[in-house]
Image (tube, rainbow, N blue to C red; front, side, top):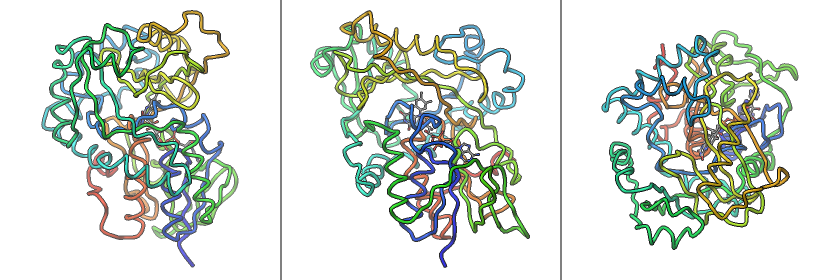
Length: 420
Ligand SMILES: Cc1cc2nc3c(=O)[nH]c(=O)nc-3n(C[C@H](O)[C@H](O)[C@H](O)COP(=O)(O)OP(=O)(O)OC[C@H]3O[C@@H](n4cnc5c(N)ncnc54)[C@H](O)[C@@H]3O)c2cc1C
């Protein structure tokens, strides 16, 4: 009888993990309260980028100087809601310290690179297996700035990307506007990373991974995990609001909701939601051909199956706080500025708005590896800004850890033990 593994959560990480484990012959149950691929998950509403170049965490040396600005501007690209500051303080303390020196930042960057280096090929392989190859577009990524000096200001970030093996081509203003005629002429310098991709519909990709896992025998149970039954150090069952599910092993892939489950097994981790928003403009009339990251706005524009998606913003509040839809309006205004050919009077029925929870561990790395209170349970949450891209590599690492094989990458940087 094969191991029975309960994969808790069916976002990109849980879905890729369930498919990988089902292929390897485990008996898999997926425990998820929502529709796999649905808007309850960060994996639905993100910017769709499969970006091997995302090797620079949000916290960088000197970030502490910007904290007063984060608190002062409620609609800035990164804000902290005052009311939540006391509860967020422990997370912020780790965030400010974790990558405070270049040496620490380089370590974090190398650990991100290990998860991302082959992200495009791994998603392509999983998507092909799930009959969803057409959802992945290997169209490259563009990064655009007002001028070269604005790019030079982030020399450290681009040095780290170069060291991670990322290659790019510089584009002049003319080359940029030939490729992206709809983009504002305010942007005169760009880089093209050819070896990058995006997902045309990330919700559909997650649903396809879950369906492929089901075709290999995985079962979907609608419910929310609430804890574990552990006897003499071995997992006996996962507790849920749908009842107890007997299990030999479990994977916590609940994104921003991982904290209480990890704590139940003795791991206290600095996990918070970095709330993000998107606006999708249906039939946008003008759009970008390649996903574009606008340097000064730190916001990507992505062509998707549903229309032009503008996704971004980082709002530190809580999992429960009401969305602040003015932030989606900020994204819409940004799109109007960046693409001057968009109609000014976009009717509400052509816009869809979303808010979701980036699962953010304060040091910029996910938690992947055995729980300290029970090695039968593997953590796989907290992927922050790169959870869509890094889901297949996470799945491969989890599968290796469950099988007791030599792991595909060194798991040490992701261990929950780093916070003990
Ligand atoms: C605006 C924005 C833009 C982004 N852009 C990108 C991008 O371009 N590229 C990229 O790689 N990443 C991006 N990200 C980050 C990425 O979306 C996340 O890191 C990733 O989706 C996390 O996947 P996950 O499976 O861990 O969590 P989720 O997708 O959040 O899924 C977690 C699932 O667990 C379920 N769950 C929760 N609690 C329980 C429980 N107790 N029991 C059972 N199930 C439970 C939830 O219902 C949910 O379905 C972005 C995020 C945001 C918000």
